[in-house]
Image (cartoon, rainbow, N blue to C red; front, side, top):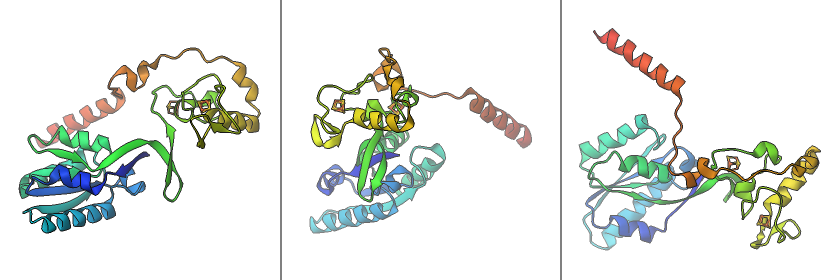
Amino acid sequence: MIVAERKPLEEIRGFIEGFERVLVVGCGGCATVCLAGGEAEVKIVGSALRIAARKEGRRQEVLEDCVTRQCEPEFVEQILARVKEEGVTALLSLACGVGVNFLAERLGDIPVFPGLNTKFFGATEELGVWVEMCAGCGNCMLHLTGGICPVARCSKSLLNGPCGGSTDGKCEISPDVDCGWALIVERMKRLGTLDELAEITPARDWSSSPHGGPRRVVREDLRELAAEAEEKSVAASR
Ligand code: SF4
Ligand code: SF4
């Protein structure tokens, strides 16, 4: 999932203080799973903002909503409709940065503010602890490293074994950070595939990663299906 955490309330309050009618919108996807921007968090943030406005004597209405996902048109439509019908003047998104971008592109002159700091792609280690596991490099090499990612889990994204700073399984940047390569070696030992590491991974073409610019995935098979469905519906309506 995409892991995010809520921005400090004071920062959020500063974004929206000049707006009369603010809609706080949560997301039922990753933001809910990492307990940062689901229905419950929308209620908490909404109440805190209403209390702050009252205390400061500001005229501000804070509305609340939560959609299934803020990164898909069908769910975002309901937010756009509400913004129009209820005269919303600013939106606070409790989704990851994808949701904020997606809404911002569709909301014309209505500003969209981020209520979360989007952190990384990761997993829940235990309640309250999330760890980064993938950097979205666009060319997965986990088949070479026992399923543990050297791009995300080695602090230097080294592809051919550890640097000289690995000590007792910890990374040289901090004794609290596991050395990604120590994890890889231990895992491959257990799998009996350690000798595969003797194979040198050549220098990578990083253009598939975010460094290559904004990326797109296009599935022609799905686009064709959508075009066929559209044609059928036009034919049926004649
Ligand atoms: S190799 Fe790339 S795609 Fe695979 S887990 Fe690591 S960052 Fe993610
Ligand atoms: S100590 Fe391990 S995780 Fe840290 S930079 Fe070196 S190889 Fe990577």
